[in-house]
Structure formats: C-alpha cells, structure tokens
Length: 150
Image (tube, rainbow, N blue to C red; front, side, top):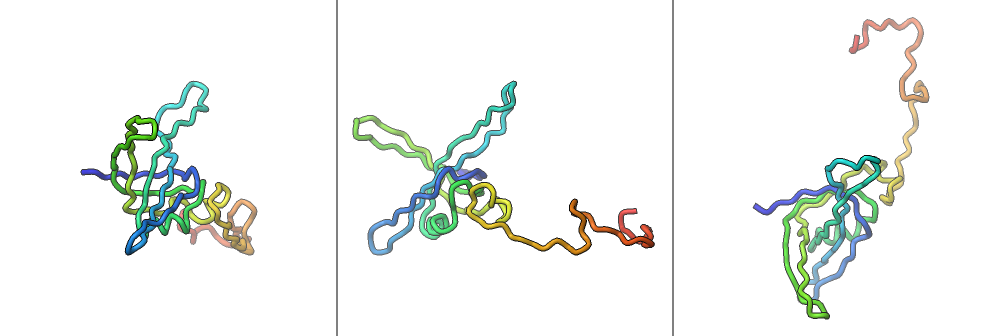
C-alpha cells in the first residue's frame, strides 16, 4: 500500500501550470515544511523539518492555485511517486514527490491570520456580561446550586 498523510506549512505559493492538449489540466507544485517529531538539542532551539515536494493535478491543482498561500498549514493525503531524469550536465537526478489525492486547510480562518495565511480574522462582539478574561459575571443573589458543575 502506498499512502501518505502529511500536515505542514506551505513554503511558498503554489506554482501552477496548465497542460497542453484537448483538455487543459492544472498542475500545481508546492512544498510543505513538515516538522519532525524528534528530540530537540540541549539548547532546545533546533527546529527540524522535512521539505516535501507535492504535486496536485486537475481540480486539486486549481484548488491549490486559488486558495493556498505561503505560510498556510494544510493537510494532504496522497501517494509517493519516485522518478529520475538526466540533467543538462548529464547527471542522473532522482526525484520523490507526493501526488496529492486530498487536501484541506489545517487551520481555522481566524487561526491562520497571523501566520501568513492570507485570511482576515473574524471579529465577534463580546457578550455584554463578559469580563476581559472570557468569563461571565454571575449576578449577586443567584445560587450556585443550579450550575451543572457543582
């Protein structure tokens, strides 16, 4: 079975090209920075990530072109595809890509706003009886016995 599931941040906006022929198809290429689950060094400041090349075809490619932007955290599933080619210097180059089958946003609209996600935060009015820390004031004279967490 060849199945991959990854969550990471886009290192740049997707690069999209359209195939030639009877039916033009979008081909979107992007790179995900995926954090490794490993122990940090003694200083605790080493951030390790793998940079994984992804390719999305047709409607998935169009979706990536329209909605994905650098810095967004996305979740993808697909399969690993390997290949090779000979470059202009005559050296054989091996490639590994993830062919995207499904892709989706991994952050909420408001959660991605401060992280280069391209979204505008949703402003919600605070309830009129809310304190600055998010808790509601309970009016004097109200007994706690009716509260569900007693």
